[in-house]
Image (cartoon, rainbow, N blue to C red; front, side, top):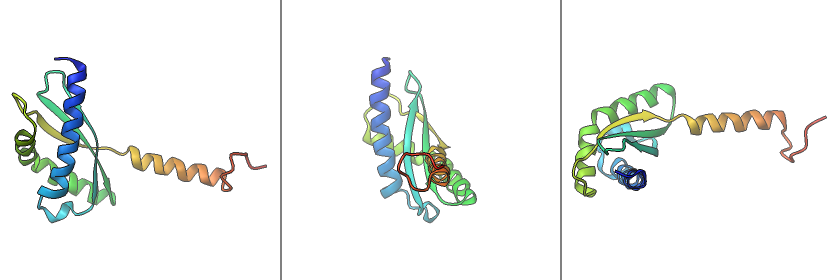
Length: 122
């Protein structure tokens, strides 16, 4: 299996999983803002790590992540219907904190230089 094919399948899975979470998943606890940020596939396309960014408190994030973990079988079935593969990958959901980290760094930079003109304060 080529790395390029795995990347193409990962991008297609990312689009489809986003659509499934937005339109198909009926659990009211997933009503927050959920974004699929990345999908990492193994080279044999048997396992997929789906990185999810969730807007909300730490407790809400953990609750939504546990709901998604329980719904992984449903999501896998839907992905199998939408993407034509010999074997549909096992899906595991992981929390992606990179967006929150980027927002934190942005706040720190604005505290250091509130004018935002690129010149250091004296």
